Image (tube, rainbow, N blue to C red; front, side):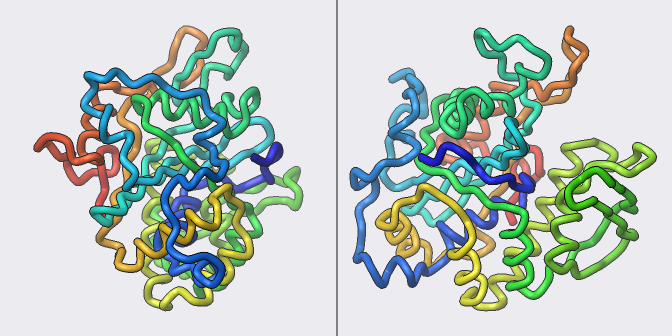
Length: 331
């Protein structure tokens, strides 16, 4: 496990790199070196370093969480000592489906001994526990859902991959005017509303946008940004499929960082050759934004909603969330 994570843009474009790198790519580099591998073949992974989350044997998730037909990958975008993005990509190899859960960085997650300003947000778990600590917090929120590996993508990686795709078409829903002369290099984001094909540099700016110089921005703040970025991600995914992926695959394999072992990558790549955009569903961890007694705004997780979401993901029972970004969004 690496001890330091390179600075990443930490936006939701990362999730599709998981799909590219781990789930959808016929990984020729891996297949050239290793034959059919078995899942969890004893190679060190993120799961090996985590303190196990106890799952009640009476829980509806007790057996399905032990499935050898599903692999879960944590995506952490880090800026300093905080995780700016936290996502979980889950691939059901038996039923050929990918589920992606976005965990808002402001999720309320108090920890014993961490009572400072901002320390009760889940993004602070990285500062004291790194990727492992973040994975343990995410697993706890998701009722003990196991997390096997992680993926890390940086600013430069995003730019290279978007260029390899040939640009990403998006519908920009708000005018974007933001300048930060103190960023290194200085950041300048200026987009008009409307349709535009973003090149690599423009894509990074679009994904980094938070608010305008005058304080305006997405109507529902960070959640609005998540929704906009998910639309961007879907567009990127479809564009990549249209290319047949070879150039994108080569670029991705040479840029991203992950603890995914070669054998596991080969196993997944072999299984995932038949996946398409119709096999992917995105979720936002159920909850609502609230200001607590410390005057900070948090995303308060709805445990009942999480249970419903996980039951849909693991196909337990008959209830399926409505087709909505906050509940589940089929791409």
